[in-house]
Amino acid sequence: MGIVRKIRAVLALVLIGLAGTGPAAQAVTASDIVVEDKAGVLDQKTLLPAVRQIDFYQPTKVAVYTYSGVASDNLNEEVLRFARSEHPEWISEDGQKWANGLFIFALDPVGRHVGTYMGEDRKVSLDQREDIQNATKDLFRDAQWTAGTIAGIQRGAELINQPWYRSTAFLVAAWGAAAAAVAGAATWLIVRWRTRLSSRKEQARGDASYASVSMDLQVTELNAGTIPEASRYGSTVLEKHRTFMAKYRTATGLSNQVHSLSARDLSRRPNLKLIRSYADAAAELDALDDVIADTNALLNRGSVWAPAWDRQLAPFRADLAAIEQMLSKRNAGGNSATAAALRSFRDTSHRDIEGWTAELADGTISPETALDRLRDARTQLSELLKDHADTVIAGYAKNEKEANLMRKEMESAQAGSKAKYGRTYEPSILGTVYPAYYFFSVPTFNSGFNTGVSSVGSARGGGGTTGYGASGGSFSGSGSSSSF
Image 1 (cartoon, rainbow, N blue to C red):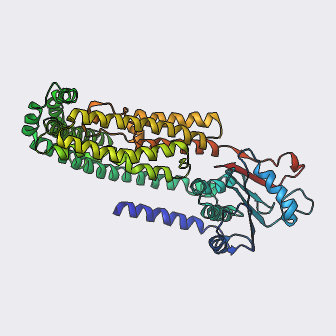
Image 2 (image 1 turned 30 degrees about the vertical axis):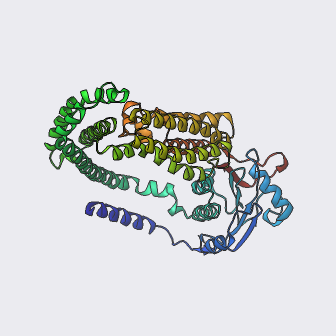
Image 3 (image 1 turned 90 degrees about the vertical axis):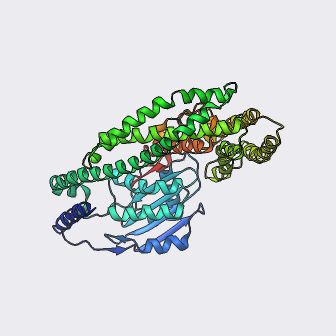
């Protein structure tokens, strides 16, 4: 960390020295603030004090306008219509531009558009207008309308009438070579440092799992030896066990390679990959020997069958507990028919779990039957989640292209791309018998939905509108809008 701090200090000195080549910039607050919150989404007790604290380079009048439109609206046209009708002073005397000294920030929270408009003496480039709008979008997507508006005005103040020596272009040109050299060194050092930390963390993870597996090796063999092969579940777990020793020998070889690495070797990316392979292999074995023990205890109704059964229920219980939080999120379709079906299923399943456990305890049903019921319930939950996925996609997507994009992300999440969605081996009997994609869980649903929303949001944010529509006439004021 000492090296990283030194690099930051050098970069700071370079920036200070370069900034000193230009005249000092004057900081002034907004000359006037007008808020026309027609959509009723802004907290003016928060907004106004915050905007009053924002520094501009030149005295600038800030106008904020919100209204509730639809996705197909042209926000530019609506802002011009409103200005002509309610605030003609926002328009230049010749009626062709926005008034000098003016910065208009516009928001349509329903149609999901954000726009920025400036007088000729305050205008910025199209790229900079997009920069201002992009500063708001993560907040707006989370329905933080006031915070997003403040962020947009703040970014506008940073770019409007920005002195030449503070522009990105100047900074890049003035100290690009020097900064690149320093940044290159910094990047190299930071990557090595982070790689070393990750290597040590992964090695510790691998060592803990490998030690646990090694210590329980004989017990695992004894457990496997008494699992009933006639059982559908037992036979599949035993198939996994038949490769257990081969995988253990592989993990032992990886362990030897990892522990032969020097401290310097831990900073190299290829070795991190090796160490992670060792940790993953040991963790899978550690989970599998627990499943072997649980299979033996449950199917043979051993003395510890009850905690073994609880561990089989744990993933299902976690899904049921997460349903309400999933449905309470924005755009999650919490009031839909499919949401009601999920809630009803959750309540019924809690009662079912109690019933299965009681029947298993008094011998009314066999362990296999209990596992069958658990499998069927999780399969039903998977189908309900798929139905609800259709609901939220239909509610969020504006067109078929967006719907297909979201559907693809949801399907990919269920398919179990570990690299993208973090899907891991479930340490349970059902997780061992069935493939990872067999059950659609609530965390997987959330991952797919969040990724789908992000993908759609990125696609929406890519297109901006600069014209003022059919009613704009010859008006050519500086401004544009985009979707979020």
